[in-house]
Each structure stands twice: as structure tokens, then as C-alpha cells.
Image 1 (cartoon, rainbow, N blue to C red):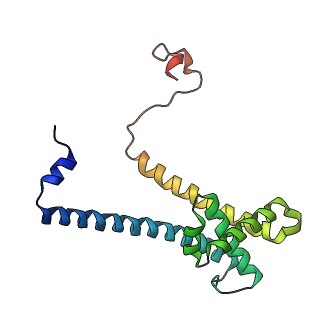
Image 2 (image 1 turned 60 degrees about the vertical axis):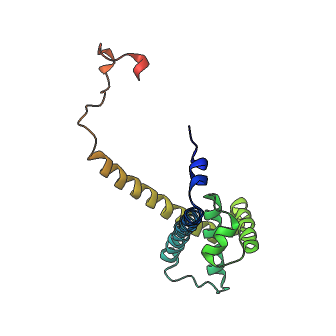
Image 3 (image 1 turned 135 degrees about the vertical axis):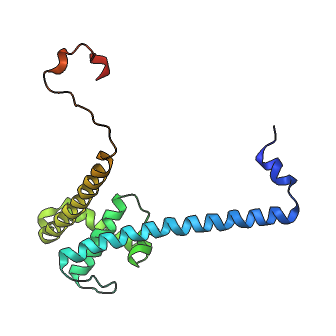
Length: 169
């Protein structure tokens, strides 16, 4: 049996170069698409914050309100598993700033009485995220429900049916 590597090595030199270039282009394109998805998540969260604050969050502003808004977005992205470098690209800061923001938000969550205003905004932000998740779930459920066959769910009291065995549940 011939492996894919053997088949590639049998190709003429020029074809191998073309194949390598095509693979390289494919990898670059895939990385750009992945980065674009990440950038979109940052934009979505910044949009949530914009709707909570009622105005745009300028990248360079040092007003406390905007700094905390960016901090909350950075912390949320951290909890979603993004690296500090990815988050830094999303909100136009460096990775050290992201680490500082994460620590600052952890302090605010750990000492909520000292950061009451921040915790109120954080709660609104989390509610907005949850509402969006539920809205997306509802839309997916609706679209999936159209494809499901007509079935009759088990009603309470139907446990006595002979065609249903406890091991099937």
C-alpha cells in the first residue's frame, strides 16, 4: 500500500512546489478566518457594552467608565478561553494590559462592596450575554424543531406501558 507521502514524492519537482504553495496558502487562509472569528467576538462584546453605557467606548479614553468597560470585555474574553494576545488584538491593547485588566476585574468580583457601581454594570453585561445565548438557543431550537419527526413524548403516568423498559430511559 502506497502512502500519501510516497505519492507526493513521486510527483515532479515543479508539482511538489505547487502542492507546498497550495498547502501554505490554505493554512494562511484558515488562520485569517480563525482570527476574523475571534475579532468578531470582541466586537460583539464591545457592542453589548456600548448598549449598556449608551455610547461608544473610545479605545484611547482614560475615563473610568470606559476603562472599566474594556476591562469587563477583556475579562469576559479571558473566561471564554481567549489568550491575552488574542484579546489584546481585539481591543487594541497590549497583552500586559490585558493581564492587568484581568487581575483588576478579579479584585472587583472578589470585593463587590468596594466596587458596587462596577458590579452593577458587570451584572447588566452578563445578563446581556445570557440573553443573547438564550436567543441563539431559541433560534437553533426553532430551526431544529422543524426537522424533527412528529413524536409523542412520554407523559407522566405512562411508566406502566409494556413497550417501555426502565433501562431504555
